[in-house]
Amino acid sequence: MNENAAVAQRDTIELCQKILRISTGIILAAFALIIVVTTISTQEWVLLVGKALYYIIVLDAFVSLGVWYYRTRLEKSMVGEGAG
Image (cartoon, rainbow, N blue to C red; front, side):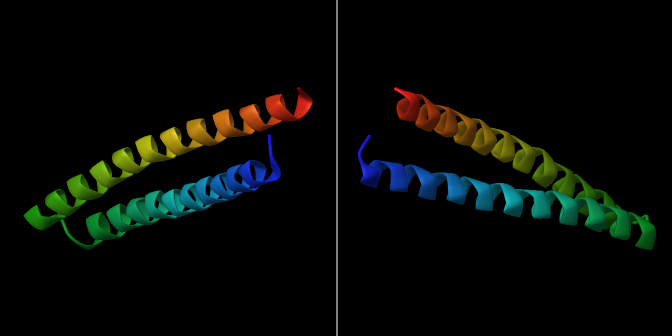
């Protein structure tokens, strides 16, 4: 593998790490908002906000899983090409 491709792969891995950190923050913030909103009130809008935040958590979990899988495959290919 040439040096430019290796740099591009490292940059991609760094981007994946940034996406994973942001996704973790979004999930934690959504959990915190669910707790705060359900503590404040039990009105109908809380149900809607809670459902929306729940779906954000679920979708973000799938995004995180996909990014993690892509990053691990990329790292494994870098190790395989470096050993070969």
